[in-house]
Length: 333
Ligand code: DAH
Image (cartoon, helix red, strand yellow):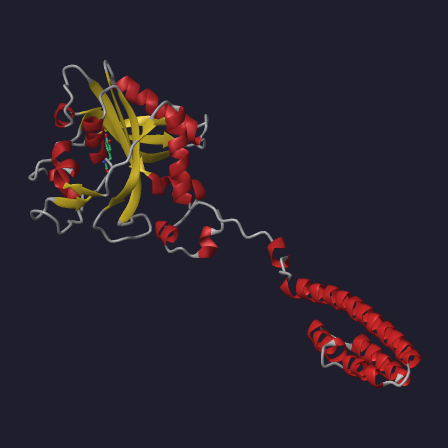
């Protein structure tokens, strides 16, 4: 009996030491120490031993074996659970090395950059920003701007008509000037606002023309505003936007919504002139369409293309390049 205990104990120790998982160890625990385990079977055999002394001696050996094996199982259990934890940590660890490479940072398109700089400069000059709808009524886009249906200036605006309302009543705005009317309706003078936005003309695109492009409109309405204020504002803007070595001039021109009207050019440091946009004193009919009394208030307006400014600033040869979204072009700026 004592020999049997020793054999089972030795064997059990070896199996416990070799157990490679907690599951395996649990099975061993049942096999060795469980109710039907080998040691329990021996235990039930104790009763059959002849003498009390033999029973006592065998019982002691048996109990020692049970205690020793229990301790061995517990210590192996601790070892295995630490190992399994390490494995799990290893398995579940996330590989973050790819995040060490900073993602490539994007940037605003050159037209957006120009748009934002224009806003910054005008805000610096005390203007507020307003926007109007791209789908506009014929009334705002033409009539309120002193261009009745028969007006010859309408032919300068190759218009996209929108199939909405009565025929010809809805257009994709051909310029940002209709926002002047909306601003006059929503704001009591004095008004000092600029209105950037996208505009549309039904024309064939080429290296200097696009069917979809951007303009920024300016409107000032106050008491006693004169052409001198217009010229001074254009010049202050030119110097703030392009630099103090730039200049500006007004050339007489014609627009239905201003009287008198002018084109304005900027003088680059090398002395050459670049045509930028149109401007003038707001026509009394336009003030009236905007609900403003021309006897009490006067003002000036101007408008010019944003894409053109981005093109000039970055020396882009063909405006169409700016909209093909070729990453090799876009990434240059
Ligand atoms: N709306 C004109 C255009 O698209 C530009 C323009 C000219 C705007 C004179 C104005 C202005 O405000 O006074 O060609």
